[in-house]
Image 1 (cartoon, rainbow, N blue to C red):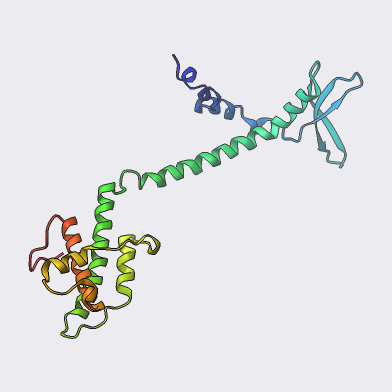
Image 2 (image 1 turned 180 degrees about the vertical axis):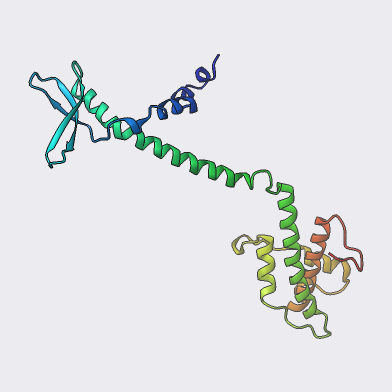
Length: 221
């Protein structure tokens, strides 16, 4: 079975061979248009062109006597004189643009990163964002009288985690860590700064779990 029978649309496409046949018709040697139509005294359609003589008179030169042809057929022949070269020129332009686009696309096809590489890059970016937030938070909490954690820290951290304000759920891990390691007091009795400290520890635990382990002391990212 031929490829054209397998794909009906293929038979409708203009093949390079067919295009070459059309171009080889040597339209530059055909009488320039516009080609006009008129009937002779017997009602037979004539295809002719008008030219100006050296004396300035308009002369008619008959090209075809279309005996037996319909008016539509004659008009089609006349219009083809200019339409076919115009369509061939447009086709050449479109194909040149197509080839240029293909060449540009070839610069990127096959060189784009894999999904795993993209995910690894995004993970490194998010780790860096969290590291900046953690550094700012630790700088505030390291004093005997802790300073307020900068307001931008939780906002940036939530954005990096993809947390939407309307979708935030209560995080119980900070309170669990506090009750696990501190024997006296309750979570509700803690100050905002103390709760922020345990929230920081909870985030550190979650990142350690995501990395399958805590970083060793002195390790660099």
